[in-house]
Each structure stands twice: as C-alpha cells, then as structure tokens.
Image: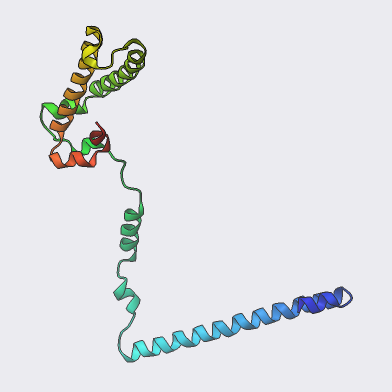
Length: 172
C-alpha cells in the first residue's frame, strides 16, 4: 500500500496508504485473537467434560520453587579454592592453609626467578656438579624448599586423589 501511495501525488494518498496498512494489520490481529479465544474455549470445554479442572495448577504446583531451583543452578559456581579439598585437622593442612606459608612460598618463587637470571649470567659450568659450591648449595636449598612445600600440600589433602583436581599442584 505504501509503495502505491508514494508513487501517486500528494499527502492525501500517502495518508490513505498508511491508513489501509494499519487497517489490514488490525484486522489480522483481531482474527488471531478470535482464533485464540476459540481454541481456549474448546480446551476449557474438553477439560470440563473430562473433569480435569485446572491442570496447570496440578502440573506446576509450586512454580516459584521450580524457578528458584533453576535460578540457583544457573548462577555461577563458587570460585575454586584448593582449601576446600584439605583436611579439617592435622599439621599439614594447618601449614598449607596458613597465609604466612602462602606468602613465604610466593617470596621464594620470586627469589628463585631472580636467582635463575643471576645464575645464568654467573654460572659458566656445563653441569651443576661442575659449578661453584655456592651455586650448588643455593640450587639445592631452592629444591629442598619446593619439595617440602609440595609434601606439605600433598599431606593436606583429605583424599589424595583430589590433588589431581588442583592444576597448580600438578604443575608443581
């Protein structure tokens, strides 16, 4: 309709085209509404003849509870924390949960990174056995600390198989 109105002359023809378009949209919506009302009345009479009453209430008795469960499942899971897999009692879990131990480990990791950069420049020996004794001692001290840290963290797990769920532990 609008194409025909635009191709003609004058605002009156444009207004007539728009009015015809609106009338056809309105009649289509009215027809759909009548069909929906007709189908609902058929369903209602069928329900009454079968003595079903309000089936929506029986099937969806507690829609608010269902919505709450769906919403709960859709929410993001709690953030991963390895401490959830640790024992509740014991020496290893107490040390592994300790904030000082965590910070000390981060400090040792940082020092080790600095040491590696220094050792690359200072150590010209092809193997660690050929290196200066100070370099050998420092390398072994870092190795000892990381081994003890690994043993303490492994001992902290309630179920030892849970250590396979912690990617940092696997990396260590």
